[in-house]
Image (cartoon, rainbow over the protein chains, first blue to last red):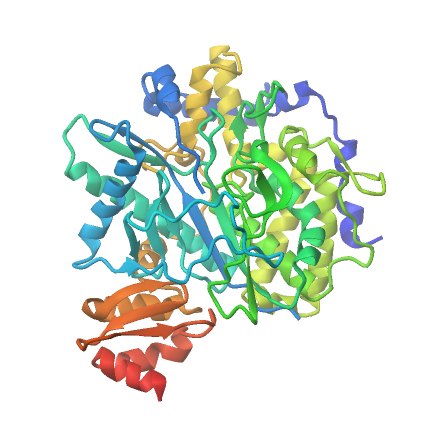
Length: 68
Length: 495
């Protein structure tokens, strides 16, 4: 077995439930967790500041002709 | 035998307009390209279509009614000082990068393309009314079933059979999206309910191999236009990739693909090659599986994950580079960077994909969308989430959500600015770009493999450039510097 194969973790051994993915962005209680949560809160505030005001209209009007 | 992977990347941008161009994306795109061209050039150098044959098929025949649209030659089409082509393709502005000598260089010139589009938007805005604006998006889908492409081109040895390339690269192409997918909220062209998927483009593929690009899209496109000496070269035209906001994703996409292609040319891939039982179905399944748990089925009924398929290609590439394969992708240092990035990315995908939120687009986008969804308790089909998806690809600094995602960059602003007007030194793009900036009044038209000069006499002079590696800085820089007139240049070239 090569060195790389020893250190890699095959994908099948991961827990693969829907909850797992949701929790990846759901940060809990630790000190660094609090910091990450604060950073994410700031980021979400920034998104609200720059996001197109009327999301429904923006999405509805975004129609493209196929290309290529 | 492997040859140096000369690489180009072409991006069709999505376009929206407020005001007089609102209902006409062709006019909006033309206005945008014109706005940039007028600012940059005293005289636009036209693109020359006389030698283009997009209907020629790599499998050896010329399609009679292939559905390939006629090229709209009347639409605006300019050559840039960096050797790129900036034009209107159907109803989109498109930037085709110059030919580049390495995946890293091609990534830089893709970033320079974004700068060109940003400048074009700003320039257009100056001549529009206050309530009018044209905005472009570097994505591949409108969320309503319409898609437009980000195509890659790789120079290959003509003697390698096309069917061998297709057979050997398919498992790689179907699974590489796990590190270069741009992410998408929802699903198109399918009855499935998907909350979020890895790729923008996977929903749109229906065939394994074919000539089409707009309907019945194939995983491997057979367009056989080498734009070079067709006895020696093939240009592999890949249409299945997503346009990336992350420079790292673009670099890894181009770098890993170039290495795999060089290995195919050198018969260095696997001693026991494997194929997927149903690649068209698998590209969608891999895209729809953000937990990366799906097992793909091989033609011998084995089950293997996308990550493990990528580890197999990575391991072959590591051995190949140890044996000197790096020379075909820009040298050992670039090859080492590709391999380290590839391995690190796969290791993180296997353990905790969210660690890649600064380098992999689909992860960065998922992080924004899912956190926003949780905060506002939204359903996955909410317009707000669709808007975040679209606006991730807005290339205006002040509006781009990809910028808020704080993606790592590979180049400084100064390097990208320089690449807007300075051609790559490694290919014939150098000759094209430099000739254009030195003698703009004498150039009638240009395309990938020739330039037509006007020497003031009765006839025009066409100079062929059939080898993409000739015309580089090393070969022609002194010649161009020491020559005063185009007539003198042509005398020297023909001597």
